[in-house]
Image (cartoon, rainbow, N blue to C red; front, side):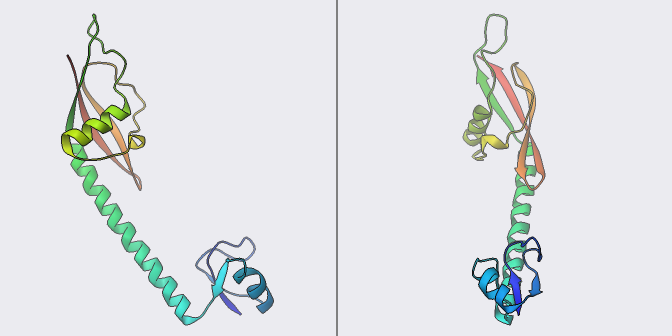
Amino acid sequence: MKVLLIKDVKSLGSAGEVKEVKPGYGQNFLIKKGFAKPATPEIIAEHEAQLKRKAEEEAAELARLKEMAEKLDKLEIVITKKLGQNGHLFGAVTKDEIAHALKEQHGIEIDKKHITDKKVIKSVGEHEVDLKLGHGIHATLHVDVQGE
């Protein structure tokens, strides 16, 4: 009996492979537990179409992220914070403030978890912040911190 594996099976193979198995193993274990489907031509064609559709969606997402990264590299946001006696900021500029300012000033919504800068912004001036957009694509956002 031929089956199309839906999930990885440790001793048999990985998802997407067509394997020849004994009928009892195929029916009573693999198909019943949801690890595989019978390898009919219709199911194999459906699986290949699904893989093609998934690849197209991933390519579109990758193109969208690259376009967004190029746009973010050119942008600059301005954040105004209160200053103390010595000219230093009260506190630091947070990731949440950066995400909020980006949405307010340019209409681009980004999750604060995508801001991956390790250094803390505690001074007035221009800073560069690294944004991790996904699929290994990074962008650099220019942040201008001004005091009031």
